[in-house]
Length: 346
Image 1 (cartoon, rainbow, N blue to C red):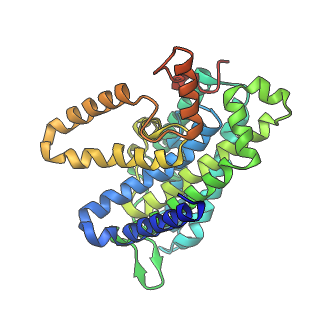
Image 2: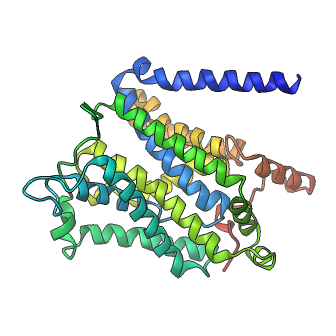
Image 3: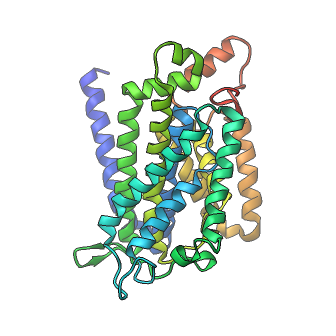
């Protein structure tokens, strides 16, 4: 097919997909709209973690910490019941608090990145895992209870307001998350094909060689941590407004594992794969709700089958697919690089 024809088909497909995404809440009803907002939250976090793990090769198991930081920042700034409220009036509105949550989360990513600059692979995973747990324990502690409520959390976080329209309804909140996900996709695509994106990929393949080629590893790692944390912070801020109240129990290690699993299942380093992974990992348990208590069993069985049949992920990136074909040519078919070896060893 001529190039012009391919371009036309691509734009037609993009237009149909956009139309489908816009009418989806009206077509599926309130319950599935709520599920779609959850899928959107995990897709947004997956896009952020895909930058850190998939592109830069930095194995981060404490990703939930940035999600929590974004959520607590939003709740502190917008809840009339928070310690920052004055006479029952919140410090600011959702739309002002949202970029502040993003900045605070991104700054936290830099703070985490500085002490782990020299760590790789399993050692980095252990340290980031500890960071996630530190944030959760701090949220539970008596030390910070006067500010963030301890186990009681922060209540009365209002829903986003757009003029006179409240986005409390999941069918409306869906559009906010859709916009956030599109922003995440746009940032990921632009970074993937930029100079910093190529530096991340080189660093992921071999840090020593990348450094020998003149890549500034410190700047590259800190940028990966901060951008990934910023996307998680946006997700946390929207989550706090959606829930209306946040508690330390909302930010467990399970969320980090879930986000990591969705980028592995979708295809590490693949942007479409991250979206598909979120649909599969978050949407499938809801589809299996009809089988009641057997749904987790069916879900786990499906995951095992999927990892055996398609270990590279549902939609692996072109670079990843090419690497796998190289392995097949060398007689090592079906043996992609384990996630524990992403970024090499310390």
